[in-house]
Amino acid sequence: MAPAPPDITTTPAWTALVARPRPPHLRDLFAADADRVANYVFDVGDLRVDVSKQRIDDGIVTALLDVAEAAGVAERRDEMFAGHHINVSEDRAVLHVALRRPAGAHLETGGTDVVPAVHDVLARMGTFAEAVRSGQWTGATGARIRTVVNIGIGGSDLGPAMAARALNAYRHPELTARFVSNVDGTDVTSALAGLDPAETLFVVSSKTFTTIETLTNARTARDWIVAALGDDAVARHFVAVSTNSQEVEAFGIDTENMFGFWEWVGGRYSLDSAIGLSLVVLIGPQRFAEMLGGFHVIDEHFRTAPLAENVPVLMAMIGIWNANVLGSATKAVLPYAEELARFPAYLQQLDMESNGKSVRLDGTPVTLDTGPIVWGEPGTNGQHAFYQLLHQGTRIVPVDFIGFANPNHPHRRHHDLLVANLIAQAEALAFGRERPGEPHRSFPGDRPSTTIMAPQLTPTVLGQLVALYEHIVFVQGCVWGINSFDQWGVELGKELAIEITEELTGGARHKHDSSTDALIAWYRSTRR
Image (tube, rainbow, N blue to C red; front, top):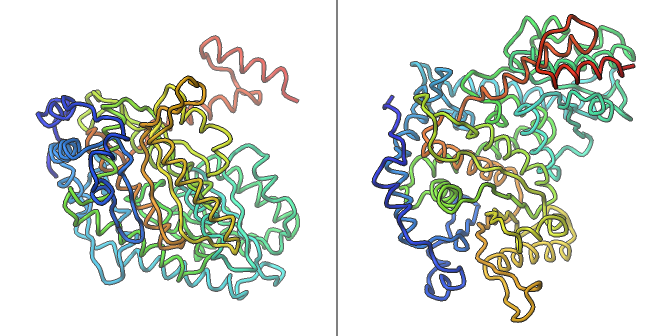
């Protein structure tokens, strides 16, 4: 593997980028360039990506691409696709792209072609899913399964939960899904409310089968099943996505119904692995395969397209421009599709857990802000909440709008109004409106946005959207010189929580800071 690239801020390419004059107002950029839309709209897969309303010009784009070259983006991308251990802090390959390679393709790490093993698991997932969907797999009483409850947290929840909602139009008509992640007992209580234990299947997703939140919720679900159907029912109502067969078996799950994945799959990149088992049950193996095909389309574009025509690279570098040169700390992702209501939360983990780092690959401190704060809500709800700040606030928030030409419902009039709002908001943010003598009703404009459109939200298109953002995150991590594939930042709080849990429930007290000690004492004295 090539050595870590130099601190990007020390390179001539970065110096040239930050020295460039800031572009004029977007109104002036459009007025001066009749070909702006033609030059800044790109088609990749089924996605139409319009970056013309970003505060860029040709000189800035060229300078950004020079920075990408100086950061070794293409070389590091090639290392990832070659199976090198680019996750240096954990000495692992990063091969989520192998999860969507077609059968017969090859991708090796450590001298082993991982694609056959991927397709073996996919085949087992498909066989199991079809058994549930057809009614062949029944619960302990012989009743068919009607509800799948996915129990996980982080990547074991956000991906399947987001995708199940996004692809609800494609689910089996006799199946529904619920998702449990929070250790707050309200979550599992709400998920179980109104369900018939005889018709409920739990998918417990934990690579180690020791994740405390997931196992706490799983044991509560197990108690619920046992109380209604007895201990012997567990094997018919629980399956596992894990690699720890000993713990899975101890729980009461038949290891024949355990679906594994690999250390080179990070949790936030695992939707298209066995973590997607609940989704396969809902939408079927064929639709899941279509989603994987969508991922692969973007993978191949990212792998092969020159940087100047590479859509994830261009979007990533525009994000660098917005965050590190123009000073925008956040990015809003605003899907005009109620089905994508969980997509911003999914991207929060993908981006902020990947690139929320303060040290570089070599352990030295970063010299630029990393990882934008990602947030958002579906339109048009957000228009009546936070868009006031987007249009007239003092903070500039770059926006990604996402929309579709055709809905997955029959209400065409609703959809036309929805898309009209999307287009109008992008126009208003870019160009504003001046009302002389009426400052309260004036809109400054010059607020950057990207608009991503597709013909319809299908499994294929969802795969393309997720892969697009995965590779954007990758490129930005390369520029910042960080490891986008570990997440040590989540460990300390979890370790302390285990210790404090014992203290809250009467265990031996440990010495903390005065504030923490006072909180523990108050809880112990107030807890019923």
